[in-house]
Length: 216
Image 1 (cartoon, rainbow, N blue to C red):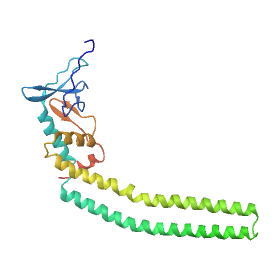
Image 2: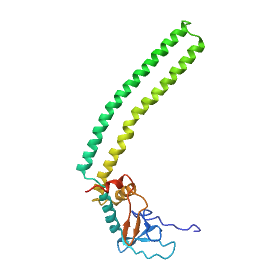
Image 3: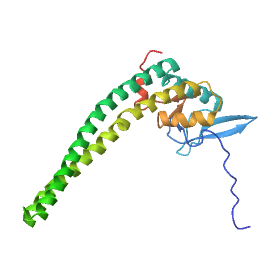
Image 4: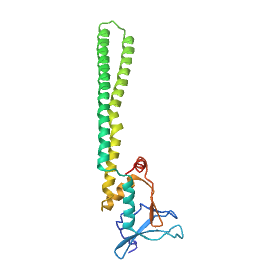
């Protein structure tokens, strides 16, 4: 009996996402007459902001998602262009990889010959160790270069392709009724959204901000 009872928080979709554009307090949600309303918690003092229906904010978020979205036609064309460049880049990288592998084979051959020369007493132990250390160092450098070549394709192109797929997803969610997915994608697009005068105040982060400048 001494433990206070705490009701579980209702799963309001925009809980903890929005702040008041006037005082900066968190926007909370209440249910009245079967509808969800968003309002400022006013924990910092008086605030003149009024209630706004949840579906109104959802509609405004969807309008923001439209701005950072691309049609399937445009996004697929851009992805195809990136894939083409990725393929061409891959061919260039393959040539470089073959060249580095050939240099590694050459060093391995030199190491074998070096060992034979030492076993035949053609080299002193000091001469053998110094030359071997130099060749091993060169081999490590080549292996690092090889790893860099193998990673470069993914590092350069995959994020771009993923971004264009996100732009396609934005167009889908702009027409969706799945508010959970809408919220998740909205958080990915930008940060620190505000509500002021029953309107969403929001700026997308890069690179989504660039898409808003493309004529739809």
